[in-house]
Amino acid sequence: MAVDRCPCAAYCEESVTTEPIAVRRLRPDEAAAFREIRLEALRSSPESFGASFEVEEAKPLEWFAERLSSFEVFGACRGGDLLGVAGFGTYSGPKLAHKGFLWTMFVRPHARRRVSVDAWSRP
Image (tube, rainbow, N blue to C red; front, side, top):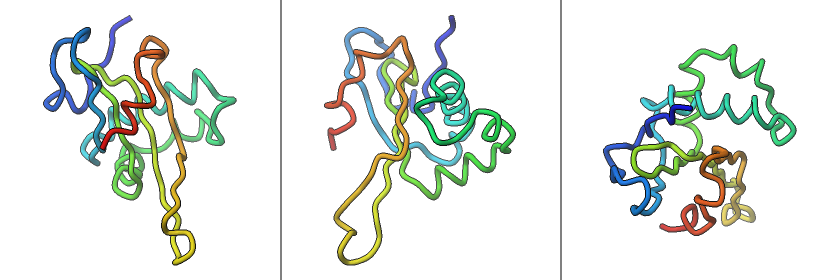
């Protein structure tokens, strides 16, 4: 199975085994990579998501770009491989603005046990 190139390959080292995982916010121009991993997540783990594969597969690429513009979506990559994504949101209002929530998270099966909580939580 071929492993997809990470949209943040320019920011990641090419060594798959020795370099740490790099996590950064995905940009709207990386919508195709986000769409691909999002659909993989919905297809392989439908019980884990409120959204459905069939509905999101029908969405145009611009819809995914808009999600990347409107929400904070982070990609984890190592050696140019996109290993996972996580979407983070914050509440609004004076009593809730200090709280956030994880609205989506998926790590490709081959990368599980490699992408640790520490990788997502580093500044």
